[in-house]
Image (cartoon, one colour):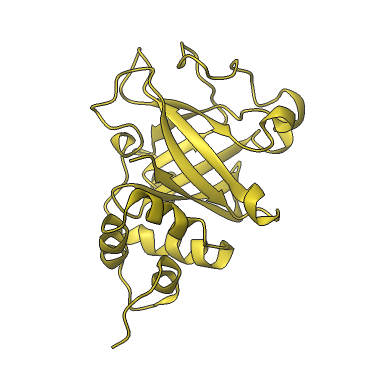
Length: 206
């Protein structure tokens, strides 16, 4: 039997379960996990998102562990499937737990385009109680909302997603998140309630 060589192999292997994917990713170093996630195009990410429907539901503490203090950022390294040259598909989603609540997270996007399209602030919340959303993922990164309280020092000023060019990227958008492993999640982008058939994979800084 040939051994699986990569996350991409697992994505395209119909027999590979999400548990096998999690075990593979959990067995890698942080640097190797990032390298594996950055090697995936849209077809592979689409397949992983679908496989992840069988995973244990992702939670807010997968994005900001309970050992991290409020208003301290946790960086997730990402690769999206937008039609851009390779390196420009790399970005970071940065999350933090606000002072006022442990039932939501604040966040924004650090990308090569932040100076032109803006930071794309969001609030991440569970989808529980919304069956049509729960089917897409247990956590939604919601750009309809922006932080309404203090954010970590060093973050850009909080601005609405209706302002400037970012309204063409983030406005009226929601990303639905599923778990792949301890550190890795995958999301699908929706504009209002319509799937954009674009995906992104995140690897939490270890």
